[in-house]
Length: 168
Image 1 (cartoon, rainbow, N blue to C red):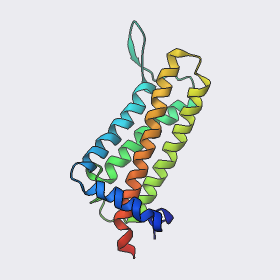
Image 2 (cartoon, rainbow, N blue to C red):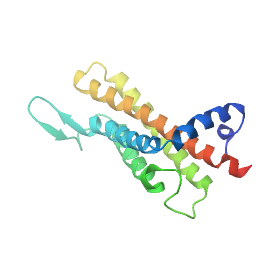
Image 3 (spheres, one colour):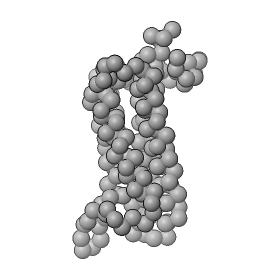
Image 4 (cartoon, helix red, strand yellow):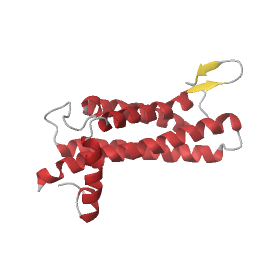
């Protein structure tokens, strides 16, 4: 069975809202597009650097080790989200023999790493606020990563709501 998020009186209203949006034709595609844009929006300011003379990809010159962790996490979770569901849709998992608990487990695992990444990026933003060259990039990456975590929660709620009635 699903965790309490998918059960109880509050979840009925939440599920009706999320699934009502989900069944509108454009919403899954919009949520999927938003999901991808948020991934790239979080990755771009951490990997691309620029100044008045040039634009370059930052690979070796990271100021903090957790920037590498955040980049790996965001890249991995983007790949997972596109591999588990065709086009980001919840209707038909790409890997047919996977049951709903495995899919929820994978999404939950990815969400934990995204939240860790967002926390580390928030910390980086706070400690580098005085350095204007890095502060704007870190603030941008942090905002995108927190917004990304919200879309992961929406995917998980929609998936839990879709299969909640099947278990009962």
